[in-house]
Length: 236
Image 1 (cartoon, rainbow, N blue to C red):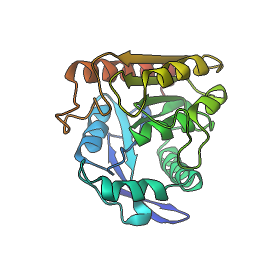
Image 2: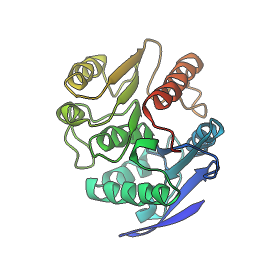
Image 3: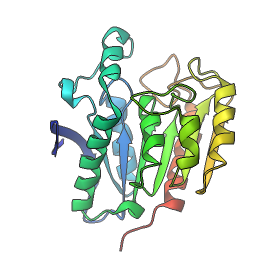
């Protein structure tokens, strides 16, 4: 763990990779359950591909808890306490930390899972990142965290964006996903949206056997890495 300062106090980052040899950096945004083992493994896997990867603990204002996947009683209030201002503060601190290691916007990407997918999409409209990837991020037609709906944000994307969604996702209907596909096509940067016919929400999470889809997860992961490789500039 690395600790960085925000205006609301200290925030932990789970970090992996060697800044001395990595040419690019990735910010990994958590699911609604905190910095779970799954999210930390995602950081490790990305770092193993030659990146520096960091995951900020967005629940740091509430003690940075890690919750069980069935503990919605405690998950929902934590999500409800997140705000656009607070998340932007945390992203600023995270990007500032990576900048101190020598990574600029063009060499820094962001990927988010579940609620983190929504954050990654919004981050793709802020001028902070060189590429953004969303895994099953909600808030498509109704905003979250004080964000406008993703459909309204789509034309503001200022960085290439890749979205990965499952057709069996009970919270994000296919109709919404297709509306998002159409909306992001109005953005200037390159966009891509991939649907997986047999995948549910959380299909990338190997710690959730009821929804984990090995085939979809492998394909989406490979697409993410290829997307970052194509759109992020390697620093000298």
